[in-house]
Image (cartoon, rainbow, N blue to C red; front, side):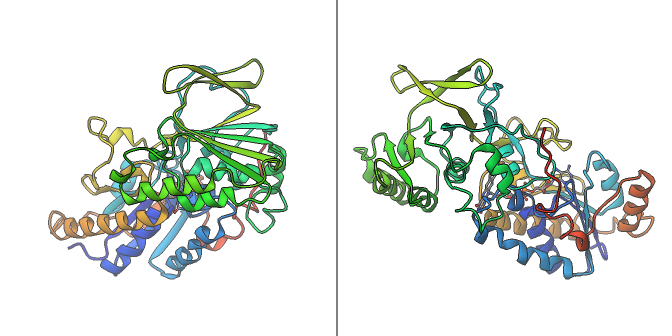
Length: 411
Ligand SMILES: Cc1cc2nc3c(=O)[nH]c(=O)nc-3n(C[C@H](O)[C@H](O)[C@H](O)COP(=O)(O)OP(=O)(O)OC[C@H]3O[C@@H](n4cnc5c(N)ncnc54)[C@H](O)[C@@H]3O)c2cc1C
């Protein structure tokens, strides 16, 4: 086993942080540098998790404790692939772990998707969370929002756009940005999925939360009592039960009308200078047109167009998940490895697994293969970044760089 192994983790989201925590437990003499493209920490916990879900965001307090350990260093604002190349990192460190997530919005691939007024949910949630690098044309969502997709992110978007500034006062929502979009003034929200109600992926708790907004009337359109319900797994039965319970909740004349609709496949977004309507096929291939003043797409995530560490580069024959070990001294974990599904805590399980594998590899194949190191990898990294005039942020500058202190960029 290499003594004092030096480890670089790319990305400071949950999977990177959990991996560092497990590494310190399993290999207490290791040294860990966490490199993060943003000046700020914790990835989607800051810029994805809804700003009114403070209990989910509170995990950051536990994450902060990692940096009390003197063997862990944070290099914020250092994009691997840009400021430093992956191959250079692999030479400097004994182990490199890619935990860089997936932040590109999956596209619908239909006509009209580029019209002004079509907003991908990843960009929208980053913007509402005060993400430093996000640029979004300040546009009013207007009276009728159509959300394509019915997973948790879609329901988050519906809730955030239905809620007024007053409801969000105790959240970390960027209220200026929320107001610019006309949040809290939307009269109709359609949440539309392609599949059947039993295939709906959203969490029953957040469905209820949406229905419980006091000035919302919510309806669910679709067959909520399928004949074969008894054969479904319990989790699906529970979701159907909740969909039935929330159907028709609220006062019918409430100021905000929300409909959850199923079995509609989007085929075109129409409009001239902005969105006017979305055309769908129903289950019988009949055309259905739903008017819209804005459309949010919430159909999942992929490599971003500007990504410098492409997940696809490591994929074998379009397989969904990557291996933990991507080749000599290179590993992957979290959303980057598994693909863009799963909660914060699910990354903990993945982190534990990758650390077990690294430990085993360090004991076996890396035995007697101590690297020819020039010195402490952190110091070498600092020298290299300085020579390239890359300015980085350390953990102590965390408050200074927090989303609320960062500059909002509007174009
Ligand atoms: C909109 C949204 C809402 C969500 N809400 C919830 C919720 O309420 N509860 C819940 O449990 N889960 C939620 N999730 C899921 C949760 O956020 C993910 O499970 C988790 O964040 C994935 O962790 P990760 O570390 O793999 O990726 P990420 O959180 O994306 O972290 C990856 C990090 O790597 C950095 N990075 C990327 N490229 C580079 C590079 N080249 N160099 C250096 N750094 C790089 C990124 O900036 C980022 O900080 C939500 C997800 C989304 C998208």
